[in-house]
Image 1 (cartoon, rainbow, N blue to C red):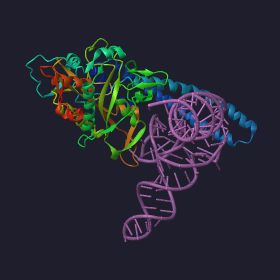
Image 2 (image 1 turned 45 degrees about the vertical axis):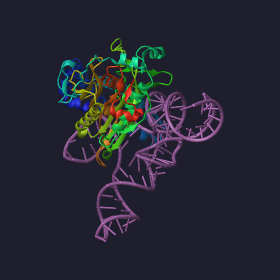
Image 3 (image 1 turned 90 degrees about the vertical axis):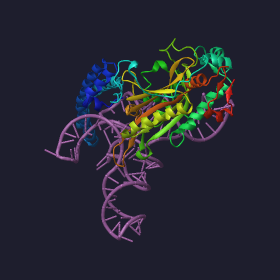
Image 4 (image 1 turned 180 degrees about the vertical axis):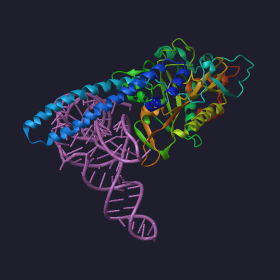
Length: 426
RNA sequence: GGAGGGAUGGCCGAGCGGUUUAAGGCGGUUGUCUUGAAAACAACUGUGGGGUUAUUCCUCACCGGGGGUUCGAAUCCCUCUCCCUCCGCCA
């Protein structure tokens, strides 16, 4: 959610933003918002004057002794109340429309976000690590995993249908090792994230606060009976953690890391990426999240990007860092880095992390503020989120990068303590 | 699942149709006193919106959320959420 004040004072900045996001029609929405905002303020002026009068008159009535005069005053006030009701109704209508339109306007891209027309205009910032040279043809994880007996696609389908799988034995343990190792990495002092375990089902209002509703309703799983919503990412419950709170300036930045399963319908992508474990309705992810002061969010983005990079680097996976262009950044993001790891078996770069500075866009919606100093007005915090990392794709990259000619897979050194010392999956 | 009791400012806690401009207390900030601190005393101390600006003042809304009754609602009615106590069930 953008600040109405920003739209009021710098409409051209907002319009340029939506054009750069390749959504020029929204520029007209900005104009409609400006009109509604003016109308709203005009109405408020009128109705509030009337309400001030009513408050005065009501007090007078309370003190009146003469019954006839009192009755006359009450009748008179009834007339005024009709006008107030009508105006209130109109304000309500204007307000609802205004909120609806306002919620359709995406965040203004950061000046450093490259302007681009398609995802082809994303900028590769750097590539780290050399893709390994194989003296045999590397297998894709769906072959590798099936032959090792650690990924069972048939039984996954039996249990829940397409896009589901079962991790078996060392495969299940490898994923658990990755999760535990990642959480331990992010909670170390130099990264500074606090581990939290949150509900995996939340109320609708938490999804509104995180910006998932109403826009992404179709991608969410929902229990109608209890009105519980399955989280599509840990970003949702962690954003909600400080909903309607005013934080102390001294406790910022607040960094959180959380492991959750993520549940997504993936309707839009039906038919794409059906093979393997790259995209499913249920996947695990370790997420990083930060609440910070506005002036610190640029640095916080780099800190989080570095934390995500460290995860890839310490696993020994070749990866590259992409700076997303205006056409490809998410709705709430001002600036986003994507991290992609190389998967030699399926022969593609897999997005394992997306690290974004959301500015005050989400904080405004979730109403998370901080107080700079005692006595000063609370201000909105900035929030950032990033994966650290998504599990299925990291698992793919580990299996495919560490495979050997005989179909066995070497366990990356850093994971061995969580694997009971196991060195090779075979 | 059943029965009952609650939700009021940063915290505690009164108010249960009209001098409430939400009492009182605690905490906090500032000041007086003091070499300094404490104590005492005094003042100030919520959030959001709109207007105004001689930067100060005016105004509206908010007593868990939403809706209603009324000239007037923290107070009455409806509804939802959450918390507590007891019973039942249960990993």
